[in-house]
Amino acid sequence: MHTISDWQQLLRYLWVAPITLWCLPLALLAKWTGGGYALHTGVLEIWGGWVGRWLARGIPFLGAVNAITVGHCVAGVSPQHLRNSRVHERVHVEQFERWGCLFPFVYFIAGVRAQQRGGSFYWDNPYEIEARARAAATRDC
Ligand SMILES: [Zn+2]
Image 1: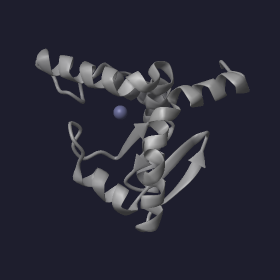
Image 2 (image 1 turned 60 degrees about the vertical axis):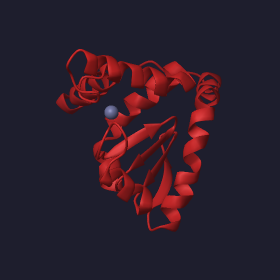
Image 3 (image 1 turned 90 degrees about the vertical axis):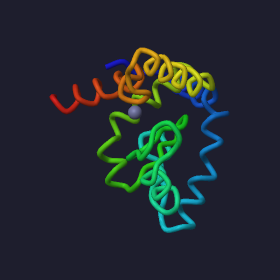
Image 4 (image 1 turned 120 degrees about the horizontal axis):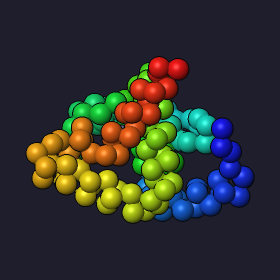
């Protein structure tokens, strides 16, 4: 397995930090409204409360989701939802580490291009296809 140095990981956190910082208030919002947050394998996981209800109700372009990755934060409906989607969401963390602050734009453009080809913004988005494929490969192990 490929391992990276602490310095490389620090650079990845800094590279993505402008995006990650936007999500930090969600941790407090979730905590204050009945949910919670915790660090898991270097990622801040946020669940429940208003944040969980908001994700379950639906967000623009994606609709109702179990979890969503924003930089090094993953927000989920519940701890169970986070556990079930952890491999998938960690692929999105890697995609954020690859693209940095550009990733939301790259993801959005990929979704729009998928729609222009007659597909779904979400299901035919190449970044979702990668995440689903790698999560499925892990389950087969
Ligand atoms: Zn996804």
